[in-house]
Image (cartoon, rainbow, N blue to C red):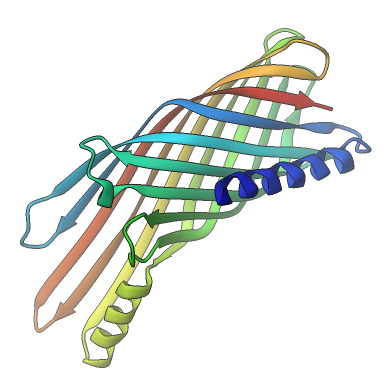
Length: 252
C-alpha cells in the first residue's frame, strides 16, 4: 500500500509539471514505465574474505517528466523497484527507490534533433526487507546529458547519460562504526559512484499520446577503507542492474 501511495504522489507531481509546462514555449512530456525484464547483481568485496555475489530479479515502476522554457530543460525521475533473490533467500530481498532531479541547457534545438547538457541531484536507497536492517543511501551530484532524435513525426528515440561526480553513501550502523574507528585514531575514507545510461524509443498513437520501449543500465557502488599501523581494511559493494521497460508517454 505504501508503494502505491508513493507512486501516486509521484504521478501527481509530474502531472502538475505537465500543467505548468503546457504554458511554456517548447512544452515537455511525462511518462510511466513498468519493468518487464530486469536483473540486479550485487557484489561485496571485503579484505581477507571471498567475494560474495547475489543475483536478483527486479520489478517495479518508473515515472517522470520534463518541461522546457526556451533552451532551459528541467526534469524529474522516480523509480520504485523490488529486488527478489533468484535463489529464494528472503533475507536478501530489497526494496529500491531512486529519484533524480536534473536541469540543463539545450545546446542543439531543431525540429528533429535536440541535445541537452546539464547536471542535478541523485538519491538511491536500498532498503533490505530483513527486520532491523538499516538502509543504504547513495546520493550526490550528477552531470550528464541527453539526445533526442525524431526519426519521423511519430517515431522518436532518446539516449541519456548521468554520471556521479561528488557522491556519498551512508548507513546508520556503518556510520556508527566509522565514528568509533575515527575516535580511536584510525584513518577512514569512503566513496560512492553512480552511472546511469538510458535508451528509449517511442511511438505516438496520437499527437500527444504514445507508447515506449526502453532500456536502462544502472551501475552504483561504494567503498570503505580503514587504515591503521600500515594495515588497511577495505570493503566494496558494486551494484549493476539492467531494466527493459514498456510504458506510456504524454507529450504537450
